[in-house]
Amino acid sequence: MQFIVVFHPKEIFKTHGLPKDFAEVEVAEQAQAKALYKNGDIRQIWALKKEGNGAVGLFEAGSHEELQVMIASFPMVQKDYADYQVFPLGPFEAFSE
Image 1 (cartoon, rainbow, N blue to C red):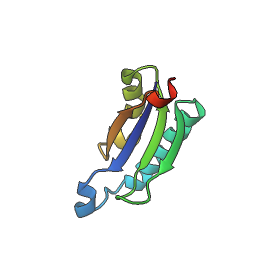
Image 2 (image 1 turned 180 degrees about the vertical axis):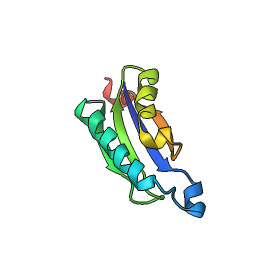
Image 3 (image 1 turned 135 degrees about the vertical axis):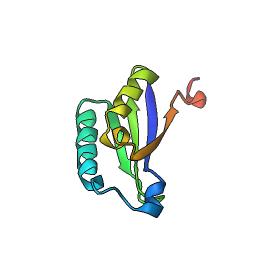
Image 4 (image 1 turned 90 degrees about the vertical axis):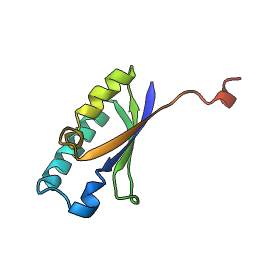
């Protein structure tokens, strides 16, 4: 199964500033994304240049539960520095003929 996952820094950072360890956690976040990419769990990943930064990833997982384990492995999620949205993907009906 494929999923689009959109990650954004927490809204509170816009008004209260970033935590002191944010840059350090961001480096660990990027390393985790690389590891998942090399493993084939992330098919594509893009940086969001608007809307307060963030990232969009195309994930490959056997189930929603497996995807949640991957998402939980990200340091920004573990530290509660990021919010995310999950969009499950399916076949485009017009191509099913």
